[in-house]
Amino acid sequence: MFNNLPTGSFNDTAMAVNNDTKETSMPVFDFKDKPDPNNEAVCTYTTYDSSENIPDADHPLMIIDKTNVTLKHHSNGMFINPIKRTAFEFHSEDSKISCDILKIDSRFTSLYKWLGENHIKVKLSVIDTPEGYAVYKIREQSFGDNTKLSSEDGFLQYMIERLLNSDPPSAEEPDEDSDPDGDDLKLTSIQTITDFISCAGRTLPENIRIWARRNLTVAKSNEVSPEERRHAQRALSLMMGINWKNNYFEAIDPIEAKRILDEELYGMEKVKQRIIETIIQINRTHTLPAYGLLIVGPAGTGKSQVAYAVARILKLPWTTLDMSSINDPEQLTGSSRVYANAKPGIIMEAFAHAGESKLVFIINELDKANEGKGNGNPADVLLTLLDNLGFTDNYMECMIPTDGVYPIATANDKSKISAPIMSRFAVIEIPDYTMDEKKIIFSRFSLPKILKRMSMNEDEIEITDDGLTRIAELCSSSSGIRDVEQVAEHIAANALYRIEVEHVNKVTYNAEDIIKLIE
Image (cartoon, rainbow, N blue to C red; front, side, top):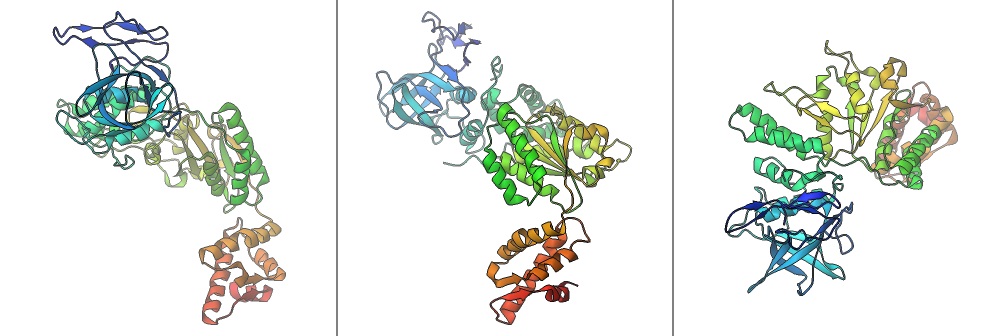
């Protein structure tokens, strides 16, 4: 069965072994046509692409023929590598019944092949549908004779969860090699990594599949040094822990995006408009724009808050790169494995920490990137990341797909950023806040946020109009709203002290009170 992996109209190869002669035949099938009954091996199933992450009767893991058989809701058995047909063999107390597999979610063909080759007994949960028995859950059975499970418990559930959250495999030739929760499983042992590569199949990008096989050979080899084996195993563990997805983006609700922006940011209408334009563009093309965002403005104006809001809208994990603390390009690109203390760079570690290839890179203080120590400008290393053409980490020795990365940079002074870097961004400048804006930010955002954190009610503090004006005047000498938030913290702490110590129900602050308290 599993030696042939059909993919629509592709020609695939199926291997059949005669148990008496041990001879191997290699018939070729074109799955646009019906299987030829004269062939020694017959593929009974077709594959279909799915992006659903919750299997059910309408989106099953597979469909099994129900002709002349009645199955229970939960049935035991194993995938088999038959001589003539592709099937699942159901086991009962007194019999074994083989049923043809009719359809398979294309993401799972390699996993079923692995389960069959290793004779792993499983329990299927099925739903009776007009088309056949729809399988929506697969669980491994307890250990038994001649049963091989992965080296770590829960591997099967880990693989199913990973595959359900993967994209359908691309249309290409098949791979040549082919209740514990799985979330906490770590791909650290050689056996688990080996099993994962086999099960993941073509859900991994082609260049990463080739890279993985090469590094797995090194990790298992006795002809290389222990240091080389350790580096290869560590790199495999990092790379296989990342869910590599294509660059397709689902549509985003612009109304919900606007609500998030209004909730996170006061004013900044120009910034919000540019972000909504980006959302509309994503909805039309279902891909990220060719350019990231560069937010330029004085310190404390909420540039980083913009980036966090965008990550929330895109529903992507985010990571930060603080360019002011990076003084050597190697911190970004990683070090070569020839060194004993070699390690991946910050960018690769960000992918590994996020666990997926789609994420928002927040590049803080792009204008403060140091010139390094004679090894080049760290900021220039970002060019390959910003171009979305792929990033090569020296430790991983592999091109990392970056077409799912959305970069958002912040800077105080754009004149200090090189022209090549600037050309990769759409620039949005944020002016400093006026006094009237700071009054609104204090009363509507900063003070309510502090009161909520201190478990205080808004009616426990009253700021008079002249008091609010005085606060804005005190904060006008500095850029941004950090001083506004510090004043709000100071006033709330003083009010809480008076409520608790003086046993008053409400504290009122006018301009004179503010002067006495703050100045």
